[in-house]
Length: 114
Length: 112
Image 1 (cartoon, rainbow over the protein chains, first blue to last red):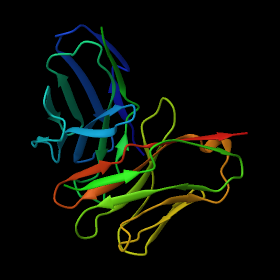
Image 2 (cartoon, one colour):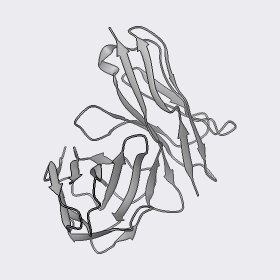
Image 3 (cartoon, each protein chain N blue to C red):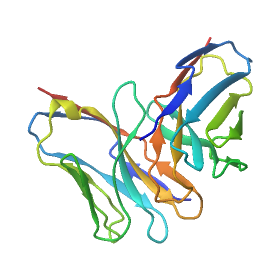
Image 4 (tube, one colour):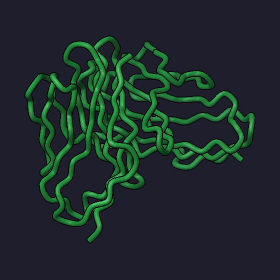
């Protein structure tokens, strides 16, 4: 088995601030993902990385940057936090990038912008 | 592009009731279809998948059958328990890209 660790669990920022969320996995999986979860909107894909040196934009990439530092870690940066923004950011990994692969999720980073 | 539509909002049932959460998809070919479950304070967990027409996926008493004709993958359970209270997500694997597309989620409340 393995685990996905997201840090921090809770993140409070100020409007306009640049904020970084981190994700580590010990599954030795090739592919990693960042999803945003908003109430009533489900999970929306922000960025994903098929292999260690790859970076792909998802449907919600505007306002975010991502970095795959090494196979086990994938970071997400909110480039300019929006006032009153509240969301949960979920990191996930899968063995490969195949569309039939199971995703394994972390427990999320909860963002609040004051 | 590919998409998933599922029963919206909240579903409230009593223990031992029969559960159906509807899921319909729009995609070409035979995308893999999934159900995930999310408990409070946790990330979604894989429940089961199906990859071809008429294939049934199942786990923990939940089941769904891949139906290409009606483009559906409805989640069913014969007798729900209070511990089944959670958010359920239908998802599909986009065959044109290395990604999984999720529905908006259905919040199941099971009353004792």
